[in-house]
Image (tube, rainbow, N blue to C red; front, side):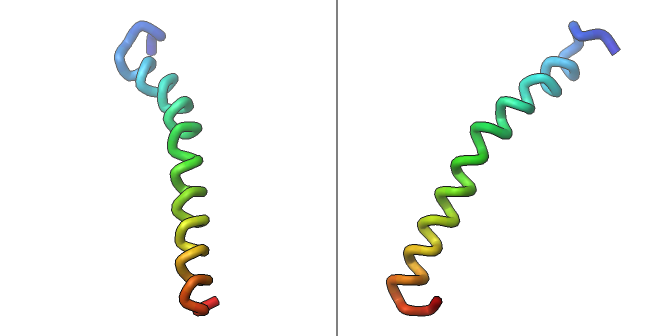
Length: 42
């Protein structure tokens, strides 16, 4: 496979997407934890 194919570019850019998606998951966990604590379910 050549580095000039679209698949190679998608694979290389996928690493950046992991960093962009990471904070979203952490944010969901923090908000969920706050909601659970608010109702005393934890």
